[in-house]
Image (cartoon, rainbow, N blue to C red; front, side, top):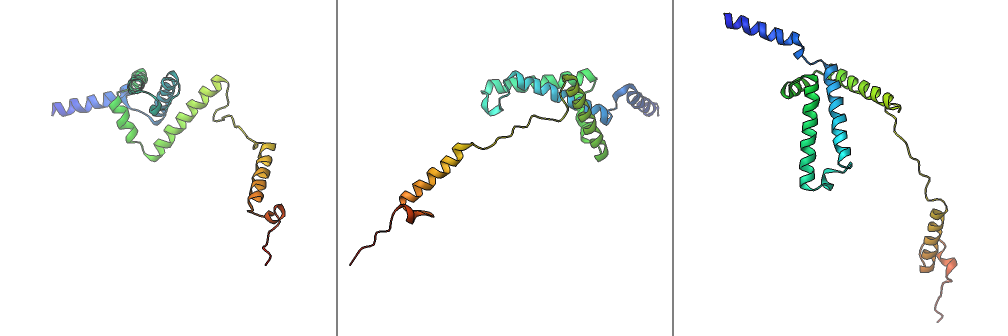
Length: 162
């Protein structure tokens, strides 16, 4: 009976001591982990893992794991508890966590001076006059070979007289 009472008191105390992860806190942690992972990737030149040697890839993975653990330590959360809490989120809680992540991203983007969620859009306008020249060149080559529309204009048909 005493052990049951002690177990109940300890579990309630740990919940009150901040051990419970709210969706907002999970979102903040995920954002911090993503920032740390981006920093590690930037350190390695932004290369894909397939472009790295096996040793570089191993080092990058270890650095990412260490940065994830550092973020969890910063928030005072155990890796196992974080994984368990993330997996048990309801649909509404997941949406709240994503909203918290996006809010943290927006806050960071404003601190950097960029509007959040906006990326630079590059608009390309074809090849200019080169494209027209390429098309005309291809049409002339087809006509010279006797193919395509207008082939009869380029070469008069030669019929054999009998």
